[in-house]
Image 1 (tube, rainbow, N blue to C red):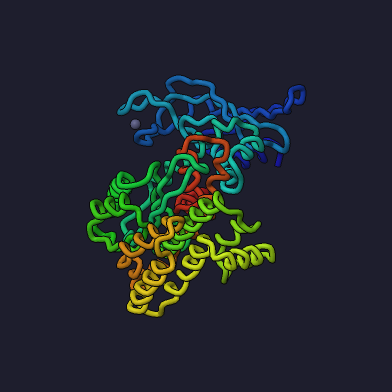
Image 2 (cartoon, helix red, strand yellow):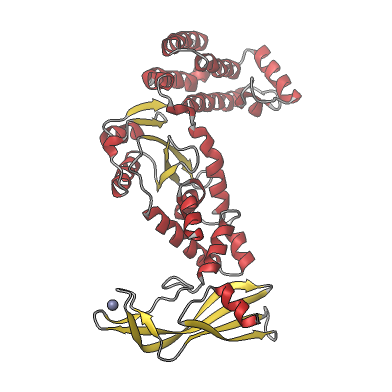
Length: 418
Ligand SMILES: [Zn+2]
């Protein structure tokens, strides 16, 4: 086998295309390998519309970046004809090694897509030595194609959550299939609230799904989401995920801590000590000391902390009835503890929220689906954020959420192996 045959195999060339010439240029940096692909004179080419073998009408020379040949950049050149179809007229022929309109071979794009699933786009672009802008164009293209193929006809249980594209920046709402263990993302859209649920409902309908088939929704307690669900997913029962209850009380606690700190000094290491779960997280000795000092002081932060920690007692209720009873007692106990202390206003607000949504909270004891927690999505969002680091537009973040968190990843693998 000579080098031409090896390269031909590597390119996956098929008739009428053959490798005619190769040239390694070591006078330029980086070195480059140029491959010239040609078809025999008089070859027939399939019409891109109907596939009929047609004669060439005229040719244009085109160049594609191909996978590096060892450390050398590699380019593929070919004279690409326009075929003259008796039925469809003169049409540009599609070449088997690249998709229409791309300046890269399919193998190059596959390698690029494999990299961006493992590392930030900026790093991948440097590694394969193309601009990040061109790499993003490839990524958007493939993710978009695979998204179009999503079949959502089986979707019955949906979880939704919001996350910031960047810390403190614009929000993205993500919808999950609560029945899928892996690649659960169904849809991601900029913004939060009612309009995002409407956009999801449209997306579902456009992918063989039916908003009327959605019977379960798991989400947080934001009134805008709840209104959206009511309007767009009329048959859905809403469950408030436990994670969001804990989050509500943890935020209230942090608010109390910040307010109180302005009035009196707090023990060192307090912030992380109070925000963690005292039972399951390993507290450092410093954090334990800080908590002990806090409780000895009988401060407002201590009250807020005790209330937050007592949530676990509700969570551990064995039955829905037990949960309702525990919520009632929890509310009474907590309101008594707070009394009229002004610093504890944020906790009072959290208690009212819990009371208002008690039925939706108790549904978690009835629904089998809420075990798959939205909380687990944070690591996915974190990974997507890191892949899209350095780009302000939340569209990049959303593309990455799809790539690593939705069935798009599997669809890409399937497309590659066929
Ligand atoms: Zn035709």
